[in-house]
Image (cartoon, rainbow, N blue to C red):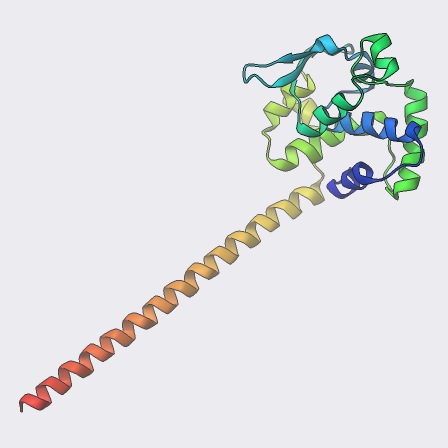
Length: 215
């Protein structure tokens, strides 16, 4: 999912709390990389302070039993606090009021229709969005993303990598910036060189005039 799609879903005002809740859970997944079952099982006790005194998700993935340590980004923290007093969260001791996977995917399809997002939305799309759009596209090293996703190998994480179009676009934008900086530097050097030439010509003229006056 692109950055534009993510922002469109984040900022959409839903008329029903049902869709707003599903959207928030989906966005939370986009900013944490949790798959459906780990988001469903996420308990308040899994939120702990890391070495940096900030809040992290510290748990093990149910699917692979691999350790997952993910710092909570501001958007994820905002959503977590929004549902801290939700009846379902209080009853289950969970972070989010996650519904069944079947309902989540059905409501996400409805969300895609309302927001105009053309790609298929499902709970797994959020995990891929975290890997590609949120982290790798913002220059987070792939080995760091691997650890946050709880993957056993970088090759596994590469399957979640940003698309070729995104990669090419980002590299060309960086090239454009470098070329622009180079042109600006060359323009400055050209101006300085021209000024220096004019100064030298002026000095030569003054020297010539001085010699003429002495004669």
